Image 1 (cartoon, helix red, strand yellow):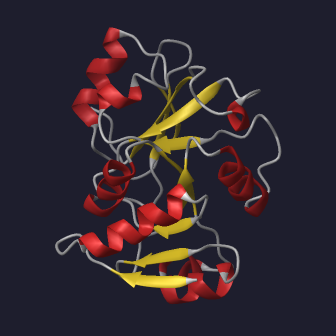
Image 2: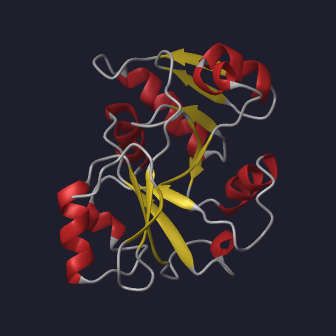
Length: 200
């Protein structure tokens, strides 16, 4: 397991290249977002998704899976949304939101049985640089730990996930407030979890 130190205001392209190489080879990365630290993998690599699902014990098909996209045009390849939902996304993204939409069939078989997909475009330069360099979405799910420090401090995450992840991106102490989850599957905007984002 590698720990790569990198801050938003000083993104190291060599580190990004290492991360992309890891993701392309089915690896799992812990990285910062605009909310909490997250576990991520190539969202189109089914074995990598299964690794994360096993790691977090997300066995139920009812468990939502979320992906990071770099912009809304990319979202349109993986999720179904209408014009009003597009307007709301455009007004709130990048930002601390997870929008839940009906999933399109382009997603891999790990999503089968899950009729929805969570969409994130985080306001974090590292996460977006990773996604853009990879050239496809990154599956994303929050890290877990036995207490707040273990969910915020990359060095403690290394203890928890030693042998289970391939790279940890250390961007300093993280935060604990998750994204605001907005369920759009019924054509409306139902906030099912109020987090950091304030919907406008």
